[in-house]
Image (cartoon, rainbow, N blue to C red):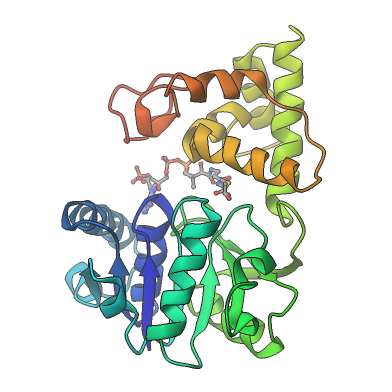
Length: 286
Ligand code: 3HC
């Protein structure tokens, strides 16, 4: 199968990697060769880690050979059977990409978006074939996180939901099918958890470290609430909050996140956020 992944950032490169491990020929598209080169290096690193741990049966180079970096979006989409868009949370940009996909991909291709927060029905509303648009929401890091949320838009067909679930299963993921409500399922829960942590810190009831330690020690989370926010990217969390509250989900603002984002402190990727990271982009537990 020809799979096209549009966007090769934190999520896109991991999704392309998963699609290639599943045996597909993958066209990975982004706006420059430098960005695609970086994505290929991250995929190579990740494949090597999977190989080391025994969870990758094939050789790293064999999987890499199925990933084709491509800056020409029309070329990447040409005749594609399954498109997954993973670009920034910009409604018009996503609509433009899917219009392009309608023009160049196979007429029966699934058009999946990895959006964290934008309604599937809003993205699909400008297309000729909205029944092909579906949410396929991965979690960071896509290669390790076991769940994919499949979001059924107002017009998404049953067949598209089924094909998307099969694609996720071929990537070894568990799936849940959720409604197209603000934040879908997982981010609605995560926002509530983040809100609770922020409330405790901003009211002076607990420190960031205390909230994070209790999340790990008492609740059994793999990461504390604030560390996870840094890991995901504070700009991402903030944009999810903005998109879902603009669409009627009531969540209190976390003023510390807003302040850090305005200062360009975005978490792991920028080297500082709630915690400090000596090598920006490289996650080392603080
Ligand atoms: N590919 C392959 N291996 C990777 C990897 C990747 N992308 N990322 C990390 N690893 C490896 C590490 O190198 C490490 O290998 P080592 O043991 O040989 O050193 C191993 O995986 C374990 O990683 P860590 O030592 O860093 O630590 P953890 O055991 O804590 O595992 C984690 C990392 C899986 C990220 C775990 O901490 C976790 O599950 N955290 C929660 C993540 C989460 O909740 N994500 C969802 C965020 S919300 C979201 O994405 C939605 C969006 O819409 C906002």
